[in-house]
Length: 157
Image (cartoon, rainbow, N blue to C red; front, side):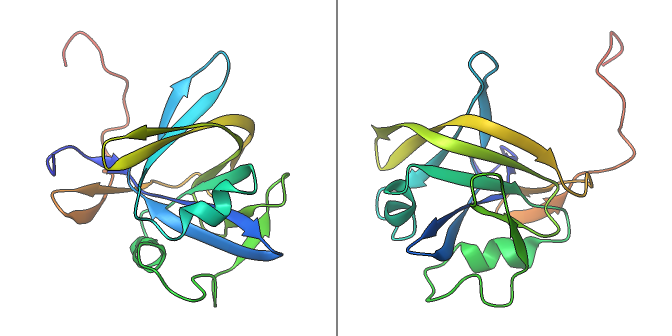
């Protein structure tokens, strides 16, 4: 599965007045009507359960220069937000400065799926932050999306 490129995002919430979050490589749009998004999180995650209890989260889609941010949020640390600039989404949940965009959500449902959980979020609001190219994960490494292939698929693809 390492050959399947995936998005890189940080899912964050405010727990007991403090920002908390985790890095995910599985963020996807799920439905347009109603607007739903989703991501997978390991059942052993220590970062997700506190966010889950709040009933909402915000996803910051990371930019091509934010691999270090993703790595920081991918491990269990005392304060992943130390030194990380952010501003509140409409829900009050953190949006990371430098992100490409954000998706502010209420938790719709959490479904156990093997050794992971599928988290579905009902979209409250979507915002464009920098609009730059996103960071992706492919073949066990962070990659940047090429800017020179900016055309829609056509008959010649």
